[in-house]
Structure formats: structure tokens, C-alpha cells
Image (cartoon, rainbow, N blue to C red):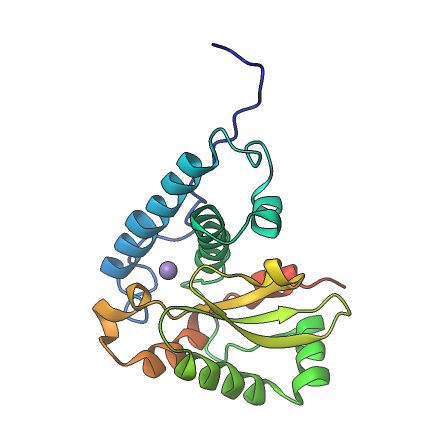
Length: 203
Ligand code: MN
């Protein structure tokens, strides 16, 4: 029966580059599985789990902020994390790919310099046990921080703005790097779209 309730259907975010465009840093096969299979599954699960709950009709952000820990939160968090993740890379990054403008100033103010930020994120990614994410995120005060999130957790759950996220679930790198997570993380610096990251900054 028609109830008049708005039915929210979460959809796949657009991939702004061909699946093979980030190769060899991220191979076509990895994008096809990661974007095409893993993210699609999180979206399907989210749509199924939110149906006929108090969270139906809420935005993704509201679900991530309010859902109790469990399958709905896990899948909503992963949809949010992956939407940001696939958007933040570009096949046409410049040779010396570093933050510019306001973002560069924020990084210098909070970390000293870009190399220190890189080291902090690489160390956090190497030491995160199991599955999860390492984020450059922004606190409500405006300050930048590097935080580690387990499984589908996300900075938005902690009232922080996600800026750049490293997915350290094995599905993000295992086809290309096997157990060499650290090598994968280091190579990602070359394909970051820093204009996208800067656009997420709350100024
Ligand atoms: Mn992933």
C-alpha cells in the first residue's frame, strides 16, 4: 500500500575516470572490484537495511551520525567513506603533486610541513590492525588531525570533516600489492586530486 513516505534510494557515486586510469598505482582490476563490487554491495545493503526503519528518508550524513553501532551504521559509513575515496583521485595529477593554497597553509600550521603529514598518515596506516581507514580530517575548531577509524567508522561520526582517506582494507590493495600495504599507501600520494581535498576544507 502507498503510504506517502519518501523512499530514499542511495545510488552509486559517479566514477570520474575510466577504471584503468589510475594504473599501475591502482589497477583496473582493483577499481572494478572495489568500486564495482564492494561499494555496490555496501549501497545495496544500506538500501535494504534502512527500509522500514526510523532512518528511512534521512540523509547519508544523518544516518552516519545517528545510527546505533551495527550493520546499518557499518554500511552507511562505508558508503560515505568510499564515495569520498573514489572522488579524491585523478589520473592527471602533476609530477610534483602537493597541496596548494589554503590547504597547504592549514597543513603547515598544524603539522609543520607536508612531509610530516605524509609520515604521520603512513605510520598510522601501517599500524592500524585489521580493516579500517586513516583520515586527514578537520576538527570543528578548524584544526587538522590524522585519525584512524576501524572497519566502517568515519570522521563524521566524531564530528569531524573527512578530507583525505586511505582505505586500508585488504580489498583496496591486495590484488596489486598483496601484503605490501605500506608500499601501496606511499604510491597513493601521486594520484591525489588536491583540489578535491581542498574543496572539503571548512574555512
Ligand atoms: Mn574499500
